[in-house]
Length: 235
Image (cartoon, helix red, strand yellow):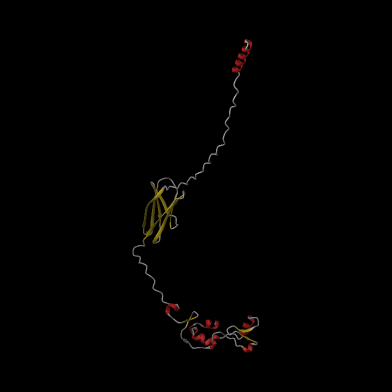
């Protein structure tokens, strides 16, 4: 049987248990998740703007040997005009028209080039007519065949073969030469007596008679008959 004091003690413990705070639940702190690095922006190349011309061809004219080139200029800019690379003889300005005068221009097709300091350029062509009464150019006559292939002549190693012709009397005195030519030839060959055309070796100059490769009379009949005396002696 429970006594009253014991019951009071149980009630006291129950009250204390109800008043005791609940154990704290540890707070979970979220950690930062590493994020992927932001993409590096790609640099976009800025296109170079194309220069806009501030001028344009207005008028081209040729009067005889005088050529006039006119440009219409839309803004103040330095424009250079040439005719076949030649600068103008005179430049004048009327309003926004630049007038370039070229004098003494030869007949024919001429090239006109205009360019400015911004790098823009343009070209035109103009035809300068010859003065009235100028005869038209005539074509050159057809050349007379001179080569063996054109004439159909017989050749030997590039030389034309033709009949001999003694156009003047032959005189051996016209083709005189020094008698010392043979020793000079031997000396030039280092003292060796050798016939390069026959491949023959000799022991003495008494076995040879070096004068010339082509006989004088043969050369005379092959054309030297028509040359002067100095040419014959040089031969």
